[in-house]
Length: 550
Image 1: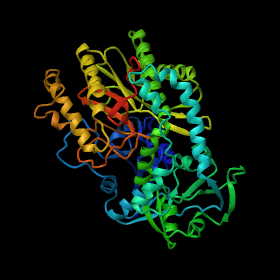
Image 2 (image 1 turned 45 degrees about the horizontal axis):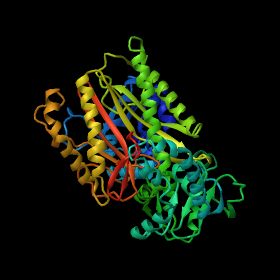
Image 3 (image 1 turned 120 degrees about the vertical axis):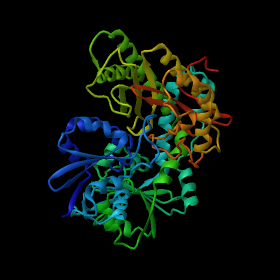
Image 4 (image 1 turned 90 degrees about the vertical axis):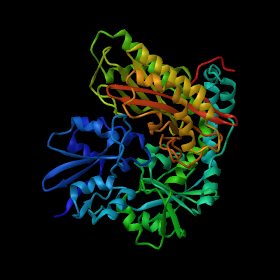
């Protein structure tokens, strides 16, 4: 008997409930590859089961009790058994389906479809006919000019605040120091031998059209990028009657449009492109590679062009957390929920945004707020109580910030913790000091993610006795067992090319931005600190450190 795999997130939520959907964290974080991380539903013999990542699995608490669960991956927790490798997505699916043929939703991204195909027989449901597409040319120089003119205006408006930061003068200069544009993408295509990139994720299509992602999604816009070419080819399922999009024809569908583009090999976003379209593209003479690395690395390399937006987003989070913390302490004797704290947080963000000309251009990227007692996983805030009796309440917050044209230019990823116990609070503050004064200055161009992780672990060694005294290290484990990441680079999403994890060989480069972090989960205690940095010639400097603005 054939089993069915449902991938469309709206259909998954319809089966598992709105509350389940609201508590998912990672589909919103992976803006360019949402369906590559969302849970899927397996229907077999009249029984439904969800396949979900460990990081998002806390949402299963609110789904129907009749639904089965299979978890893949592993999120770091000091008390978890890490002696066995984590289960993969396809292994998790096959634990339910066995060797039977899986009939897959055609919206399933290529990466997942191919992984399942390697694990056993698969097929796709019949997909709707592909629509006709309108073909346009867009000058890449026009997009780069749009980036620069908005950046210049916003940097001027935000300079008074940046001057108050600890390295204010250097940070002010960094806001307008680079104008890399598409040049690093040309270089990456040359390095990897990619003759063309087909961009399908609306979050990324935004970068190749100058149109906000919401418009790209509404008009069915995708793009074909040829390195060093003056024009970018834009495909749209609806007409784009704008003077900056120069009409170049029509095609019966996107498959015909790409087949006639004259490119023998195209790199595609396998973590975004649907399997339904991919199987049609495979019928052409085109060869396909994966563009995911090139797209992420390019956005890492050009992120400094948008430094002002990263500086703003990170400091707006801190102002929001300050507001939520003040609200929490004012109402310590009252009933509060995680969502109450999030509401207070966003009020603080809004006040800060209005002060520097960013009103109505800031949005929630993720709101992770919960006590250590509720969960040690990165769960989105829900209708769960929080109170002064909680040992720790973690804030891990992300914002998006757009330019005047509505295009997302940066996100933030910043963490702080409210600690009830003064000793835990002192430890939290010490960890942040280590980030600001130890780890971030050590992030130098040319270092690999693995090397930076090793530095981060070494900086924790003086605290090992304190962790043990406070019961925050399990028996038989030491600082060397801290295998969670110590941070990452950042671009228009937190899913970047370099993670500070053991074994990562990818290196950081000058001008890259990112986040350095320590997260310490054990029992009912969850301490998290995270700050933003930019890599300068002499190492990283924090853009979230208050000071005299030297």
